[in-house]
Every structure is written in C-alpha cells, then in structure tokens.
Image (cartoon, rainbow, N blue to C red):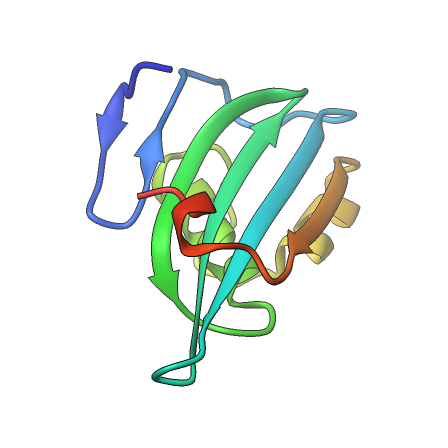
Length: 115
C-alpha cells in the first residue's frame, strides 16, 4: 500500500475522516522479544472499518505501549480529537460510541514487525 504521509513515529497509509459513531477501530500489535538484550519491541497496525489507515513501525516498548502509540498516532493524524485531555483509547471509544478492538500477537519474529 502506498504511504500518503510519513511522520517519524507513524505512517498514514490511506486517507480517512475522523472517527464517527459505530465505526470499527482495530488496533493490532505485534511484539518481538530481543533475547540477547532483554528488550521488547512492537509495531502497530491501525484499521478503521477493516481498512489499514496507520502503521506505527518497529518501536521499543512493553505491555500496553502499543495502545499508547496508536492513540498518539490517531491524535496526531486528526482521526480522533480528545482536546487537551489525555484519553485512554478504550474510554474515548466508549464515550463516543465507537467499537474498539485491541490485540497483540506475542513472540513474533523480528522480520514480522513493520519497519
């Protein structure tokens, strides 16, 4: 897929309007564990209504870091508007009647992460 806009922390893969009621937001992460250095890395794919919209490439982090990165990418790209408040994405979606699914695939190989 052709990249429309690139930022140091994410790539916008296709144009999309801001999220609306009953849209489906899927945040899909992949995590790789670097056994030599003991660090975890992840990438994130953000889909809206089953269409890839944003990719957050290979980044250091653990636990729910992938959700935080997705939230920041959604805010910076103008897809969600939380004002000055820092919302957790699940709370934002619940408050705005948006269906949200977050999941991560653990134990991926390094080459499976987006660059």
